[in-house]
Length: 306
Image 1 (cartoon, rainbow, N blue to C red):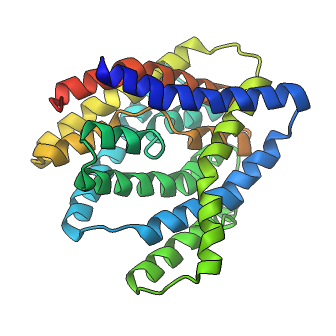
Image 2: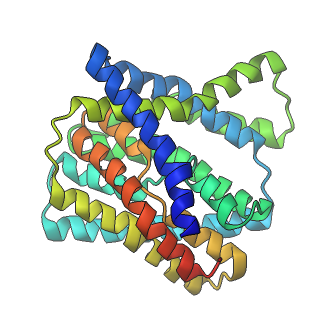
């Protein structure tokens, strides 16, 4: 009950308020969702990635262990989804939309506070979640863009789209400056912090605008499949991988918990920006966030963290 109330009060309610505000703004002013999407991709997201990479404090051993887990988890999850997509004969843009709704998960504003509540503010588990968050910030801006464009553009056009995004250049610059201990002038870093802090609010408002604009004709079959894969199959796969890799203790628990969170807003932003099943993507985020109130306490119970 404690975790249920925590998830409800600290995740579902704040997220829902922002989504409702976004929907209300659209209903009142018919706000342009494309403009919000451009701001997320070209302003807020690059600032967030830079500040998180630049501020990161990663122990090399933990980093390698977490990256090994993440690469294996991500790869196996992609293979599993591909098999299911082919078995269900999902076609066109829905293939990438379904894939993105499962492999991109809310590793920041949902997973970080959840991690710190479950593990009582443990800085070690926080560092694990931050590594996952950084990977989940990078992949939507590379593989995610390729996936949503692959069925309608050739490789050259898709790569041109990816290379036009600022985040591609922000990542190596942030890593280089971080490990070469190159200081960023305060007058430059302060606006970057302001912009990065605005990412989540803008992304949630964008989701609200999209939900306010859509017809609310649920694709129950695909949305349900996405939710099951994201909230049930993904953490089960996480359990299997930590067992195979021989990862134990609090590290294993933090990694499995990181797999159990709902679909990321990145899938919605990609869908809106590239006109690829935005209604399905919005519905997947919305429903997985609601259903996570039930599934995450179950995962926490199975982890034995209480």
